Length: 169
Image (cartoon, rainbow, N blue to C red; front, side, top):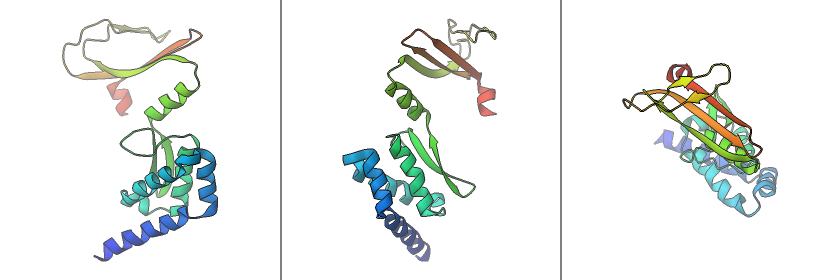
């Protein structure tokens, strides 16, 4: 019961930080009419993460504002942006979906794609150019690697491939 009271007190302290005029102004400047909804997501994030509650609540709020300035949601389930404690310090991190969102907003991308590579699909890889030939057929459901690909409107394209072991390392 005492532990629950401590959690409630920390959440109330965080809500107090969100009532700070500077925090409210920064959110309003970034998000206009969506500032209230974003503040609710900040409270949800903080309330649902006990390790984040061990961080300075003002620092947590300031990291959340970084996501707001980029107009990226901080709902963990969406995968756009995260605020995670790193050695006791809240740290803003952009998820891969957030990176894709930011790239799309530039209006310069024709295609963006990422996926897993199953055993048998990778026919060859040109180490010099970075091109990969994915013309093989999957022979199992074993994941052997991952790729990322993009093509700009001006024709520039890039492929990046990593083995599962490289990603894990």
